[in-house]
Length: 255
Length: 235
Image 1 (cartoon, chains in turn cyan, yellow):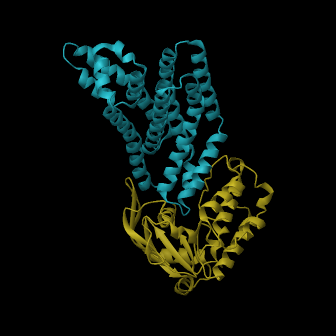
Image 2: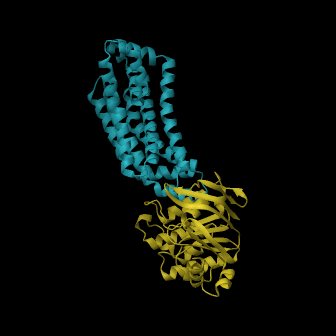
């Protein structure tokens, strides 16, 4: 299995896109931190950029890579290799490569400019988000035999989780503004990994105070150590569930 | 050596295999023939568990192959259309399979040398012609000296010289007592290679006979003629 993972990683590194992705992330973080004197504000701007681009790149790159590996997978299945080993190698290879990119592009500058718990939270959530979207990308690739449909589904999922979901939550909030809906809203937000990442960083930066009652509820729900553990668990579930589902489908797939 | 018991497989509405039972033993060179879409490739792929049958079990040396992979160490497989990672070179592909197989015997590089692959082993798989890709597939199938060889249309796309090399190699391996399973449409090619013939039609095995029995039954001495005669009789 280690051999296959090595092949996947070298194959991805030979693909220049991952290098360009690293450079773009570098440009984002360095320019934001050098333009903004207030690191808290800098972190918030960076967070918005991260939460929009990182999931998109992870899911699209991961998805297309899976389709391009069709021959590789077919070749390996005819050899004495367990299907689960092939699948986990692809997952490991993809997530290691993308996470390394993220760590070099965003992680190092953040550690340099914001060497605090906030910085660590940003890096950690970014890496979790990367892995989550790789896992979802693999599920999309196995669900759709057709490449165009698979990529379409990936884009839909990204759109839904990063834009539409928040829109729906906001709509819900305005519709029921007269009722005490902070708690159900917080629970709703917890189902979306991107929102969860955002909330965790917000709580670290302490802008939650500015958000009034909602902020207080968030602080109460996610700010405690129990809240932290629960949100971490939800993020991990977002990695594990799509992965296990895709593995199940792959084990039954005819090549 | 390989035993299939009541294997059925359908892809959506098309039935590819219908209750196929077969027993393939070592030392035989079996020709698997039949019209297009009769289930030959599906059967081969089920033996390699590339296709998961809906019903039935397959035994390799008496062991159920379901969820097993080690048995594939004993199989050399040459696909009908070899599909390889596009931006890997011939050398990288072969090295990768070496890595996976952890083979500790002596490698059989006869085909690699005979096809002259060392002249372009740095070429990317995407730039290779269909015939060269077939040569790579054949080389990989024979490289690890497996006791079973499964060749799906081995000579389709090969030039006459390369086909001849491959034919000689197949006969040589048969004499070593290996089990060889070949599908082909070029019946004339199979004449002096085969010991047995399995004929499939519409997802079922129609007959499974030794060549001598087939020749006796039909009073013919060529595979192509014997088969057509037999088919007329069946109809």
